[in-house]
Structures are given as C-alpha cells and as structure tokens.
Image (cartoon, rainbow, N blue to C red; front, top):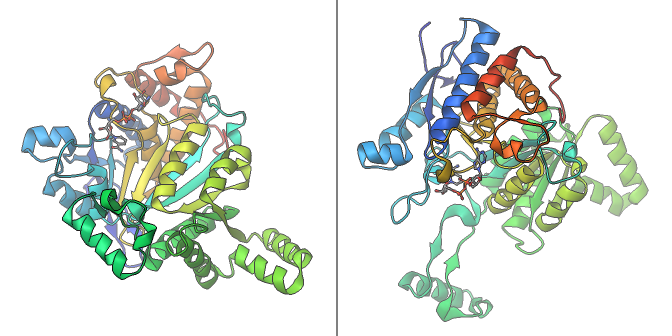
Length: 432
Ligand code: NAD
C-alpha cells in the first residue's frame, strides 16, 4: 500500500487515502506513555476493522522537550511545515517553556494553522467515577473560539511606555476615567470580530445539522461586554437565520413573535419548530451557564462560545464526567481541513515514564481523528472496547482510586485490555 498525504478536495472535503501519512507529537512528561498506549489501540482497531486494506503511516514530528534537546528549538519550523502539509495530526501534552520566547507551543500551533475551533465533546462513560449525581445527563459538544478574545495575547504590562501609550489613547477617547488606578494598571485587549464569530457559529450549527442535535446554545457575557460578547451573540443569531434559516428556529424569532403576537403564539411556534426537527438556537449568559450545567445539563447539546468562556466551561464539564484523564479535544480549521487532535491534560511531569496514567484522553482524541477522516468503524470499535474495559473495572490508577472492587492496570496493560475487547459490541449512544 502506498502511503500518501491527506489533501483538501475541490468540494471542501478532505480526501483520505487508504494509507494516510499522519504526523504525531508524542509529547513531554507522561506523553510518551499515553501516546504509545493510544497508538497501539488505534492501529489494532484499524487492523481489526479493515484487515490490511487500511493503515495509518505514522510520521513523528518534534516539539517540546524532545525537540529542544535534539534541535535547540521548542517548536522547530519543520514541525509547523509538516503539520501544515499533512493537514491532520495528533499530539500528546507539551511542556510550556518557562521564560521568554514562545508563550505556549499549543497556542503557536493553533495560531500558525489558524485552527479556529477548539472542539471538545463531553460525554459520560458508564462506570467512570464522577462528582455529580447524574453524569449520564451530560452529553454536550463544545465549540470554543480559538483565535480571538482576550486570549489573543495583546497585553501591556503596567508602568511600561506601551501601557502609558494605551492610557493616552483612552484619554483621547474620553474613557480614561474608567481606569481606576492608571499608574499601576496593566492593559489587555479583547478583539472579537464578526468574521471570527461567524466561522465558529457556522461550524457549530453545521455540526448540529450533521449529527442531528436538538439545539445550539451561544454562551456569552454580552450583558456586560456589549460589543465583544454582545456582538458574538448578535452575529451568531444573524448567521443562524441567514445561512440555516430552514433548519433552525432562533430565540430572536421567538422574541419577535412574542412581541407581535403574544407569548402563547411564540410558544406554539417553538413547539412546531421542534416537532419539525429544527435546531433551536438560543443563548445563555456564561455565569448562568456554569450553574445550568450542574442543575439541568440535559437542556444543552451543542455549545458555541468565545475563547475564555470556553476554557472555563470545557474544564468544568470535563470534571462532571470524570475529569481530565478522559476528556478529548481537537483544534480544527474546517475551511482548510487542518486539524490537530490532542490530549486535553498536561504533561503531569511527576508521573513521567511511570506507565501509570490514563491514556483515554489521547485515545479518545484519536477516536475523534478517525471520525474526522471518515474511518467511523474503527472509531466505534475503540469506543465500544473502552466502555467494556471501564465497565469491567479494569482501569488505571485515577479511576481505580475512586472505584469499588476495581483491578489496577498500568497504562500499557490498559491499552492491551482495550485491544482484547475490540470484539465486544456495545451500542454507541448517549451515556453508555
Ligand atoms: P497536568 O494536567 O499535567 O496535571 C495535573 C494533574 O492531573 C496531575 O498531577 C495528575 O494528577 C492529573 N492528570 C493529568 N493527566 C492525567 C492522566 N492522563 N491520567 C490521570 N491523571 C492525570 O497539569 P499541570 O500540572 O498544571 O501542567 C503540567 C505541564 O503541562 C505544564 O508545563 C503545563 O504548561 C503543561 N500543559 C500542557 C497542556 C497541553 O499540552 N495541551 C495542557 C495543560 C498543561
């Protein structure tokens, strides 16, 4: 079988050969342990499902400590070129270099490839220890905007000439009185654009359409930050109506009907839209949303939100379904096809090379990658085998410590157990 690159087709869909070359970064700290375990399961599942008709040709790219030790650079230019050329890649966690230079390797990758969606599915696996009473009610997919907001990195430290320039500009704009302590203030800038919002919300609604999800919720703080977060909400609704008018029913439509024809008529209209299978596009203010995910998580499905809100929400939701050892993620540009699938936890350096940590976060990111390239049979086989393994309580230390009568496995043993269970067929669905 000839190994080839994944490419972007003229129809805007990626073209995947039977032996795609997929670059990987094994990562720092516990990265090599969880990567080797994940790779073994992914490869075994592909062989299990497709025999010798399909296989991934893995290509290592260097980043983090391994890159620094070999090349003197934390993120060599060649790595960025490879990630750019091959479109789809996967990575373990990377150390954030301390001191000057690169602020974060992950952020550098996201910015270079303009990976504007941070995609985090959050879903409970039966048997995973959770701090909430009904983790089975959590079944959400978060679309976090990845390139804008206060995370753009435009900051000026207090008492620098730049901070003074910013203050002068605020004086010119007649808003300097809003700065409580001008002499000791640092400043940060929060760019949020119509274009950036539109591409993120478009991806979220498209996902809901493709996966038959009931709703898309825009989460924002528009009550306080009128033009940035408020703009996100307004542009999001406008996009839903302009581009997905026949497939969605928005909360702004409900409000308009309520204002002109009363609440009962608006509610009838909403019910009718739901009965027709339309996606309900609504919005929730971020602080309220953090309550709602604990109080009534069943009401939410696809979430579209800005960068900072998305950061908090992703971790809060991950905790509800069993924590960071099992939460997968991906960074995607749906226009160019670039996608980097990644473990969402860090390098946990204390546990490096101990073969004890849970590989599920990286493995489930691999499952997302298989779905992205259209190899859904292999993805479903892994999901099914992972569920069986957890239900049989044969788990790594993080779950073992919280379960009754469980068997403790090393990272590599856990991977072998999943491979053994690749034959088990469990219905893939909500909260299995
Ligand atoms: P961390 O996620 O590495 O570890 C925090 C704790 O979470 C660990 O001590 C461990 O108890 C637990 N944990 C993490 N991964 C686990 C797993 N797979 N299985 C079971 N338990 C697990 O967070 P940290 O200590 O704040 O960060 C360490 C380093 O990782 C820093 O350099 C940080 O910048 C980096 N980091 C990288 C990424 C990334 O590459 N995506 C993300 C977060 C942090």
